[in-house]
Length: 366
Ligand SMILES: [Zn+2]
Image 1 (cartoon, rainbow, N blue to C red):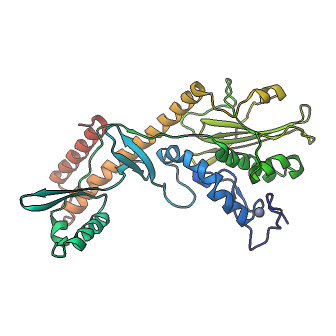
Image 2 (tube, helix red, strand yellow; image 1 turned 45 degrees about the vertical axis):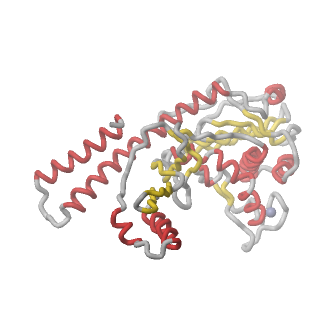
Image 3 (cartoon, rainbow, N blue to C red; image 1 turned 180 degrees about the vertical axis):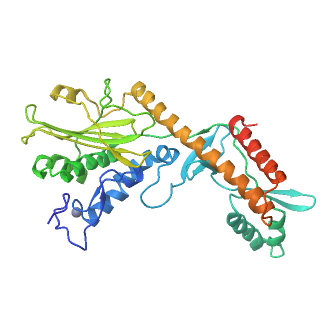
């Protein structure tokens, strides 16, 4: 029998809920139904968790991280140098942020120029025109409409803000949940409980160690949680690292009276498997005092973020090569020669040509 660690309500079959210790939106897998009641969980989910999730939305999507439930969400807010809004669909496909709709008066009458993002949107825009012009023929307009896949020739920029009190509350909750999930006693972490519940408190700090804290394997991107209970220094803290690049210390207690404690959880987002990590981290009171809740680790984070982005780009490339092949199979073997049962040399040549054109365009943008 457990109680919700935030509101103390007894957890029953009715109000019990699965809490993702690392947010599901960040691809987290570790979870427990012994921590929070439904009400507290959803209150945090709509508030601090949603804000933290938003901050990592692009990175998570670009790494093609699937959540436990559902697809990779559409990431909004991209902009090309010439100011066109671009969304990122399914982690890798750029799409116009909004349809284009222009009306021009010419000697032939009104001319509408529409670029819609799919057929459904085109239909609905045409229906809007029909409301103003009852004789307008939607089917005829659809007949002359063309489907076009275009590569964007200029870079798309996504700006992202990290940190802030709400995001920190969600990070503190992750550390807190991890501690309690590992049978830590709530009496040691009351300060963090009240912080997550809304009280102001400076307990989450940025932390980027100059030394490597654990061994990184090639191509892995991890979420890592590591709790240290230090009887001698009366300190209890949790190192939280997201996407192998953003890391924090959550001060769980600065007057810790419990036993010495080390407890680690690592999760490789690329393979979707738990990983064992031997984390070497030892902080004293002065180290912790010197950590800031204001961000100042630009150089450290840049090197780590560059590594993660290059892993993501490799994944994107692999996926696009797969997509190019699939599109050519669909176009040549299924659509054009779908009725033929024997594959001829002509079909193979056409297939190779299609793949080559798309591939060169993808690699060199020509
Ligand atoms: Zn509760």
